[in-house]
Length: 283
Length: 322
Image (cartoon, rainbow over all chains, first blue to last red; front, side, top):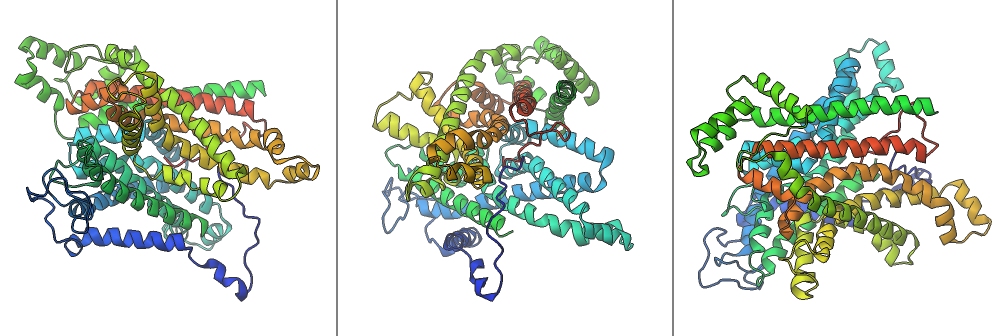
């Protein structure tokens, strides 16, 4: 069943006077600003904080948040804001790696299955069923334990656990486009299969896959944070967001050690999800 | 209709068996193809105190001196007769270790499922029928729930209800109250997915003509919901529920770690730390069996619940974002 068949009863806006309806909502603008800040943190952390994320000041243990230490300090007197900002790059990059693996391998599987059809489709569909049958977090845990405990391996594992979803969406998009009249026309006009694939099928499928990729970027941040929380990522002094929460929970008298990195994670993922929803509705 | 259904059921059951077997093979391949030889490394580690005899026995049992495809064949034929292998750490049968912890995780996942359903229906009904600003505000909840790391919900609940209010003691992990809060942790992300589907379906159904007719006959909103909208809106939840079962099993790893429970999740965590691969493989196989069986049952029951679904095309499964 189509889970959200929101076939809007509103008729499409006609005429120039209805044009402002396409304006970007304020929440989406805010989300883009948050993501821009997060990207800036990961590209140039030095611009946002001058304090050392690795070496602490022994006199400044467990200082609560203040103007000087926005997120307070930890058990070694390190500035937590600086640690969060410096950990951004690793958290964001690993989520990107995970999404890239999911999009590329899942997309390829879905594309081949949908485009070739027949026996290939049946075999690939069975493979995707197998991937779906293994709980994705469990699959990520097994892969990361086979590869070794590093953040990059956690990213690869997260990507592998997302392959099935991308394969499914890509396949259904390809099937939808393949049966379209203009594709039939292109083939009748003598277009080669590669031409149809590149000119018609891929551009049409890319929209849904893009929206799913954005959604999975947020999801991957959560999964990788979960793996880091369990200790399957880089060990300290790395400062991935999940790792910061995990080490912060050992000091209950300094709750900011948990809440600051946690809030950064939540706000980032919320923004990503908002953008993904907006992409879906502007279709 | 009945013959159609039987044929469909047999076909689907056959597919399910194939998927479970392939999932076992897939895990085997992931573990043995990826670099590193954890099994012999574990056995040879002097800290584990295996004698040469025991090492030889384990190596012979797993056929580690054989080529990979022979090992695979042996592992698969053992799996088919229900032998899950022997732990590399404790030298105990994996099946025993699993049955020991299964009860705790089933209690956790079962409670979580109930919590998720109750929470989801509460959110969806509230979003529909509460006055402004509460109703519309509830619509933001699923998205919020899906943006919070699962371990954080657990930490928050422990902080609030155990440390501050003293409702349960974090040490006594298996008490009913502690189980409830662990289940809440596990159930909240799942409830978000169910609530999203329910809200969308209620919106969709209340725009249908039959709903307008019922309203024009003077039916109040609660009666309209109970008599007309509830059934068509909540039937698809069966499919979503089945799809989220895997998430409950995967999420148990983190939840059990946060709450210090002993269960399948903590067994996974321990086995990962100690590279006890036969245990990991057995857990994955178990999870795949549970997922496949639950989804099979959901797909088979669905056409019986919803007469609109024809078997010709086979009931489509909702594509829930995992």
